[in-house]
Structures are given as C-alpha cells and as structure tokens.
Image 1: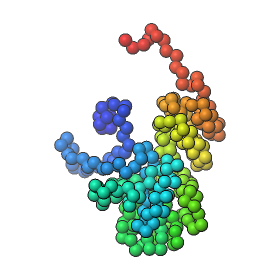
Image 2: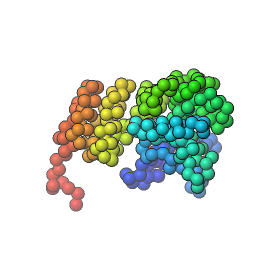
Image 3: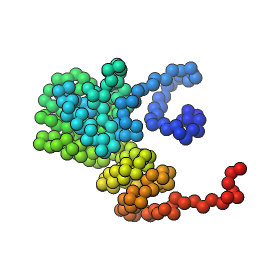
Image 4: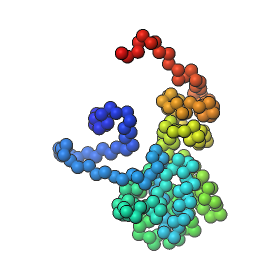
Length: 260
C-alpha cells in the first residue's frame, strides 16, 4: 500500500529499490525526513558493481569497467567516476550502499590500503556478492573464502567473461534478474538482441525465469523484432516452454466496446 501510495498509480514511475526498516515503538510522522542517496554514478537499469582497487591499478579497473558494460554491468571506479564538484567520500559511500556486488582487484599491497579493506568490509557486511580477482596474490580474510578469479596471463576481456560467469553461477548475485529486466525494457532492437543472446548463453537460467520472460513478452514492442524473437523462441524451446509468434501480441478489439 505504501509503494502504491508513493507512486500514485503513475505507471511512468519505476521504483528501483525499497528498504523497509522496522522501528519498534516508533510512530511515523509525515514530516519525517528521508535520506536521498545519489545513484547517478550508475547506468540506468544496469547491474551495479563496485570495483575496489588500489590507485596504482586504476587503469586496470577502468578497462575492466568498460569490458563489463557488454554484459549489462555498470562498474564504479572511484578514481574515474567521482566528479570534482562532489564530495568524494560521500560518493563512494553512496556507491557502496547501492551496489549489487563488489569486485576486488587483489594485488600484493591491497591489504595495505585502509580504504580497500573498508570497501570490502562494507560489502561483506551488506552480504552482497563479492568477487576477488587475483592479481599477484591471493585474497585474504573473509574474502579468502570466496572463489577468486586468476588474472595472470589473461586479457581484460577474458577476466570480464569470468566475472560474467561468476555472476551467473551465483544466485545471490541477482545478476540474471537484472539482465532479464534489461532485455524486457530494451530501448533498441540492437540492445534487445544483445541481451537475449546473453540470456540464452546462461546455463544457470532457471525455467521460471525463462517463463517470466515469455509472460511479459508483449509489454515491449521492441523485443518483438523477428530476429530477437527467433533467439527468444530457441530459449523457450530449450526449457520446453511454448514458443510465441506475432499472433501472440494481437488482441482483437470490438469497436463498439471501446471506451467513450
């Protein structure tokens, strides 16, 4: 009810995130102030990944951020994304609060950085998915319990591919759900084809997730392109879900019954 009231039934308003905090014995006041968290560092609709790194590795982090965009991942690199006019510490805190996951580039001197340690600590405290990338040393502490990605001898594109695989394999990451939304809300046929091809390549996609794509397929005319539908139907067939055709979207209308 509160969510409906906040949007006033305006379908153009999209609620991206909601946090419900119980306050025992407290009474809500309409004049209570709300904290507005800046999310401008993220690409709209993309999966949000905080890339923790030492300043000496900012170029590597930036290259990885660029490579991950092809997978619908919006990366945050502190030394690149913070605008000079903004308070840098507040921007980092907002990015950590709103990230879906964290990727840490672990170098031998990573442990010497108090900032990197705190970034990882905040992410693990939020219990979001964390991916360590081993660049010259192994992850340590609580992060050492995670399966790391070895970067030695690999191109940035190869590391990005492994990050993509790790996101797909772990249901905690929430990545597949974000990718489904990217596809269903595609703003161009080119993007729609890119996202459905990515979804088709994911072996861990569950049948109910594939069915949710089919159930909402009629909501966006852009994904009804013939080439896009061909890939989507191949995905549906893989999960033994009825395929769709152009008639799936056509609803006959009786002119007499149109609203006055």
